[in-house]
Image (tube, rainbow, N blue to C red; front, top):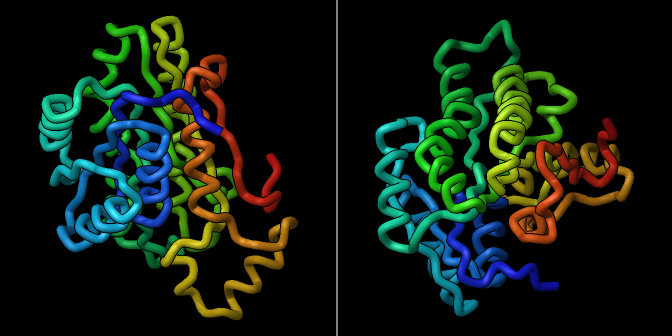
Length: 249
């Protein structure tokens, strides 16, 4: 199924990661001009080569998304290179897991800055242009653990829950200007990070998922493509779960 995204400009943060790279690939397959930020030259090269093998292209821009000044520069660079940004996917995220009583301030702040504050940093330089043009799609990637919480992830769960608060408030502010804002909350997905978990632990996770398997990154990406399309123009302020039935809120 094609979603009519040919010629749209999409910026995906964290596009060199497991879910992020799938989002970049699917949006490019849909005809978008795709950009991502990066900090690792090696990861960008791997993504670029993988997409080139499929006849796809991507523009990479070095940027620390926890730095608001660098994010303003990122927005300018993307728009100079590709054109005005139509689609923003706030996907970047990290984990620094430990129980709360062992959690240092550095672990707390690193996760909040990367997973939550970055959504402000990247969205702020782009939102007024979207409103002025009367079109925009902002999609924030949260998590099942932002919906239900998780032991050892007070920082991560707080940040991911905060993302949907951001979604709901901003969606109300910009809806009449043709801009939609939505949250997608994936469950456990077969990324390199999850597949590196010991097999017995991974099997225990899968046993909790009613469909009996991990999600695939491309399944998340295709949902993003739908939300980025005109077909989803009436969807805004939503938190869409995609977790195989593991958590139903």
